[in-house]
Amino acid sequence: MAKKEKFYVTTPIYYVNDVPHIGHAYTTVAADVLARYYRIMIGADNVYFLTGTDEHGAKIAQAAEKQNKSPKAFTDEAAAKFQLAWDSLSISYDDFIRTTEKRHKEIVVDFWNKLKDAKTPKGNPVVYEDEYEGLYCIGCESFKTEDDLVDGKCPDHNKEPELVKEKNYFLRLQDYEKKLKELIETGELNILPEGKKNEILGLIKTGLKDVAISRQKVKWGIPVPFDKEQTTYVWIDALSNYISALGGLKSKLYKKFWPADVHLMAKDILKFHAVIWPCMLLALDLPLPKLVFAHGFFTIDGQKMSKTIGNVIAPDELVSKYGTDATRYLLLSQFGFGTDGDFAKERLDDIYNAALANEFGNLVSRTVSMTEKYFSGQVPKYNVEYDKFFQFDLQTDWNRYDFFMANLKFDEALNVIWENIRRCNAYIDKEKPWELNNTDKDVLADVMYNLLETIRQTAIMILPFMPQTCEEIMKILGYKPEKELNKKISELRQWSSLPLDQKINSGEALFPRFND
Ligand code: MSP
Image (cartoon, rainbow, N blue to C red; front, side, top):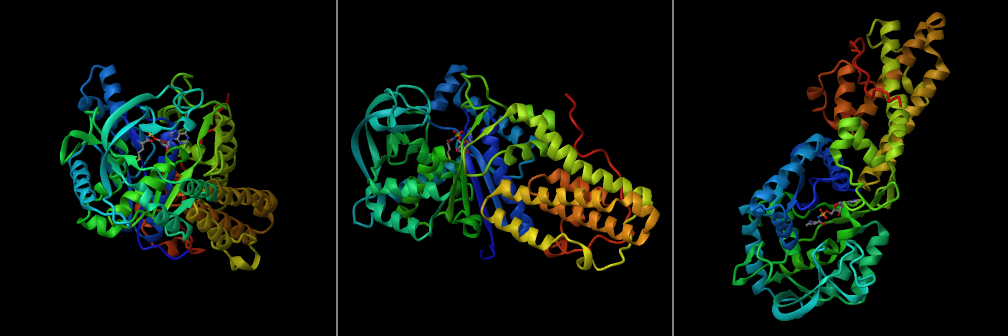
């Protein structure tokens, strides 16, 4: 993969009628991992990470009314809850966009005016007015066909859609079928995983239907600038966030960061991002995102996460029990990124104890305590060039890790890290430093150096996933993390950059064990 010069990653902007839960957290942590990874790789100035909240539409207006609140008061409170949740998970977003902000509304209005004058590749007006009658699911904020329904109900929201009849503005998607198909097939617009790309291509093959992009009955929305009777369809409003947050088409940020490198989301909203958004961008004559990535949906202990079932897990629940970094790890390590999976709550203690307390935490604590015991807490001077006898090949690990990170295979990148941790633990058991201490101090110095240096590199590898843990380990190894972690990636990955004689500090256990 060619070296990136800049990296722009987005999450969906979440609906504020819901409180933040670990479904939202899953995507947001994944996006944060990417942002942190690219910040080390290409420099923080070249990375932009956007998240935010989707605050208009019938669904939000109804939720506010239910709580007897004005939509403004309701959305202010709700957006703050998302920000607090992201703080507790160390989400390092560069911007948090709210669709009720003036800066966003201005861009949506700008897009309307541009779309109104635009022509499709076939020479038709992009936007036209038509009478529409259809079944509308408020939960999805979209029209449904009979084929989408199961027993007359929307399968995602288990509710009968309402019959809506009104005059709307339409976006002429059908004229973009050919172009969109071509762009996806050539990979200019990449959609991953592959299976999802094929689903979208299949959908285009059956023919794209024009989409209504305004609403008459929904008052809580951005007014269409040339028709005061109508507001903007919430999905058109929401998708525009990816550009409005950059400050619109003339801004410096737009020029530097657009097109997005990755729009991240779950499969539930792929269609909007892989069909409607690209067509809208084509109509506006703007570059398309490079990659739209739809990860899987997870269930909780085998069941859909839902308020009715009462199994919704708030990020705070996990953070207060396991801590921020462990929660991030638990979220991303459970199943392949891109496939559906189950989040088994009763297994979390075991995973935490096994992977974090026993394998990772223990490796660090026993290495540190042996360094204290055998070398008065100083990095020992090694005697042999490491590649002459050290069987670890960290360079291969870095290559595999980079490959997995570039392809959003987070669980596999974590596996590389854990293979390394396990190898170190096995190395200790094999070399038995406690015996070497009596038999061969030179070899002991080599063994301890190898362990300390591998732990240092492991800390760099784990930084995107567990930023606080990385800093803790850096402190333990005697560094000032803010200074050390500012170094170039090539220096950070350089074997034997851990200075000889540096003083090690034993700290608290990284991951105290849970005893049930
Ligand atoms: N507001 C729209 C998105 C507009 S983006 C221009 C929306 N919001 S949402 O609050 O419903 O968020 C949906 C997203 O939340 C999913 O695409 C996914 O990123 C995340 N998830 C919600 N529940 C999830 C699971 N159970 N599993 C995995 N991801 C989950 O749609």
